[in-house]
Length: 261
Image (cartoon, rainbow, N blue to C red; front, side):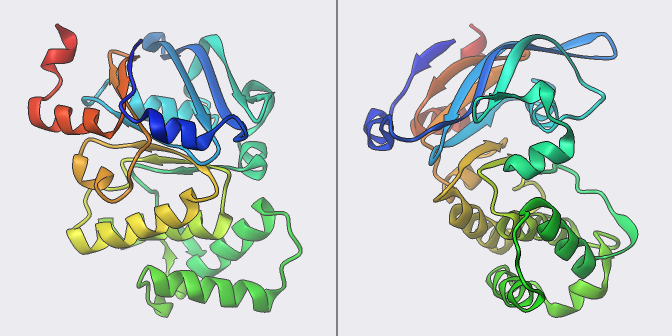
């Protein structure tokens, strides 16, 4: 991996006092016998925002799904650790309870399950804290106001009939309520208009202050609002170059061809 970190001062600011949240060593992943990720290594510390960029099919979403334990993806080599514990030993719900969160590229609808009930059960199950019903309602109202989500959404079924922007704001509402230690955001900016993008970015930034973030995106516009400490470029299942925020600007201007040369 070619390392050309352009924000060393930011790295120094993090310091060694910040614990390593996620450690990936030489990860190889296959889907139905097809090799997708081919030797990926990455380390994310508390307080760091890492962005991964790359063409469609480069393995970005595969990485996100593997980290949260999707059963369709087979890890054929390498190790992944979260807070020093090997992820292979943790089920999907155990990963969530340990402090991991995935915002899906394509959030699924859940017919028959009301948003309000879904959020309440998620918070009580994942946060594993003794929060009263009143405290939950007050916190929910505050987060919904920040994301400009109307109260009427609580009685609707999860993502059923939602626009793309409404689905993404609902994902960020879950993120803010669950308050994970590691947020994995898979193309959260796709399909958002500029106003929705600003709201979603504000939600991400509010959580990122006390967490680590892995932001998967195609576009610079998200990184103008959620400013990464490190940017990584994936091509053919590998991180081929890492740097600071200026690397994303260079990719925006020149595309990926220069990285394949």
